[in-house]
Length: 218
Image (cartoon, rainbow, N blue to C red):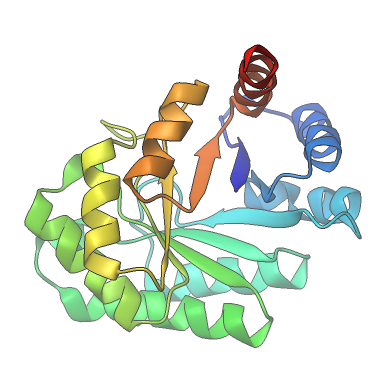
């Protein structure tokens, strides 16, 4: 249930290669990379059971729906099987809900036609609880597969409270991804306990090492 993130501005192809090696060895859910690195990631993960994930509208969500669609189209063509898209945060705060639903529905339509999944990033650190709930409801109505807390580059990462809220809003039939600030096994377990079905982190090796150590003690 881990999406291993390789999204820092300074990370290079070497980091992507190392991430794919780790992902294949640990059989994690996906490797999430910047769009530029989708082709190499898809090649390295071919037939591994690990998904190739990339980001759309990252990290601030301010692109037009048409730009997000173009990015998604290219990513799917190059081998992405999961898309993590950031909503237009300003439009949400403006209560321009039609724009939010349209951009999500357009990307979801493309992805599902290619048998790919979409995770909608709300960037919860900028929103109050009412805005989080509305955004999650819109994502669900537009057909997204997951709602996701954060990019990891906003003012706040995932919190137990936000994960619990999102799970309550979308119910058991939709995925909830916690991302941002998940660095330890205890962080991961807290998010799972709150209702997360997927975790986004760059600390995969550390978390799995802690898990093995703890199991050894038990």
